[in-house]
Length: 319
Image (tube, rainbow, N blue to C red):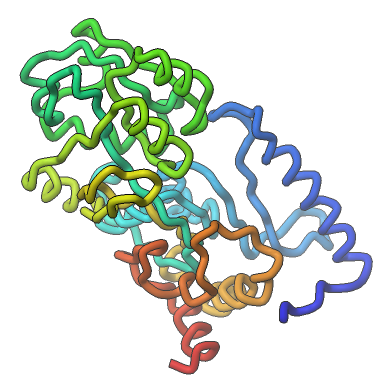
């Protein structure tokens, strides 16, 4: 049973602000780069100036820099691999950042490179070697996590999406994974490839349109692993996959903080996630609060739990 919601005027005022913020930031028509992120600040507003104790925000992978500098106490990132990059000091980050997981929202996802067999392409290396004018569907926001990953993946072979365009290729730009612009081009046979995650809403359509998985070579997987990207198996039949396929893990939405963030506050945040379990909107694969604090398919954890979160989970789980 969830704990009862708080009572009193302060709770009602807080809930009033929360609902306004959620509606504004959650507007699905707001494009990437617009006012679609939200920072929740918990602290003391009884004086002339607001005194924050715990600010939590959503946003880009490089918000990790703000958390590391102390500008924001906690942030949430999708997927977990970008937090791994921050802690290792690789990829987007020039040096290791002292960050830890407070709670990892379970999200099971994969990233795949899909190709139309009519191109004759078997790998990303083929695209580079043949300077193929690929018509490829990707996210339109260049700061989106998928675009960052694509840049990292193509860089292994020394080319980019801009190079593809320079060879006569074309980018089919989308917002959501099942954006009508993608679906329309897929149905008319215009697309040569799709590079994306969110497979639950588009993979089956792509397979039915004749597209197939593009395999990554072992040395490519090994390189991506040094950046925090895990090699995982997408099993035949899952989301319409026509066969078993080794691809990239795109799972986990960790909420993280600096390692020296006060232990009692990290403890409170972890405890709150469990106390409000019934109020949180979970993904279909959700299997319980243990996923927030342990390694699962939906919550890859290459970064340790914060000491406060670890203490809460030990006490709660009895382990």
